[in-house]
Length: 348
Image 1 (tube, rainbow, N blue to C red):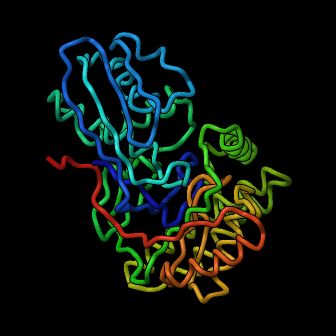
Image 2 (spheres, rainbow, N blue to C red; image 1 turned 180 degrees about the vertical axis):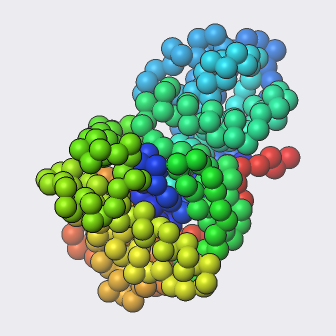
Image 3 (cartoon, rainbow, N blue to C red; image 1 turned 90 degrees about the vertical axis):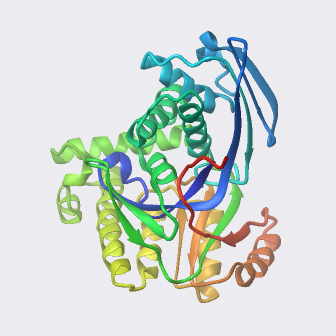
């Protein structure tokens, strides 16, 4: 079993060597895995009609459009390390909404690598598992993500967020907000492999180069304001202010103080400076705040996906969302409680 994740705060900071504060949620990917007498891999999912069967030696030939590219990417990454995997059969079942920005992909990867490690007694460490998942998603699937999702899915503990410092991948357990947390799936699909995500990453690298630093982790908002202009200034301004918000949030949570205003500021920054929000996500946040939420922001990479709301129950929020989105002839979002969970583990 491997959970999905919510990033409480700290968006697009991971590949900029900054900070983030994600936590695992009680929506997860289940995987039943069994060895096969043949040198082939058979993969199926209750959520996908497409079944894939492929020789172990040919995993790299799976179609780029196939969802099976995620679990087969783990096999490919293991093979690159000279770790041979025999044939096996795998059946996936997931409650993580696909394309919702809740790391359904990292959940599949983590479930796969943990199951293979356990079934075939590979003896891999938690750090190895994280690296393999990241390598599979970046180099095999082609999504230029940082390490946030893999660390959150594989390292979380129930009741706590994971404060990650991406400079050295160190982590610190941090209490979660005492207020109710609600996830709202906008039903506007989010895809990390799209060109927009990669473009934002390039823009951040260009901004760092213009500032003369290795990464935007080394820059400050004041420096950005003074030395950059145009797109570079906007992208760098989001990253540098977001890093400050993450550290402030972690400090407040350690002292049981509210963080709603930090989430609101994060959303505004993602919308205006980083330009990764969308009409649906903005409407969700606006509706929640009008109902009295203490904080609301888009989560995930953006361009669709989900939002996180603090201080409201899902049954308070859902009717208002239904009315607002129906009047605009938009797909009605789905709100559900965000409950924290343990990281990936074996169930039986």
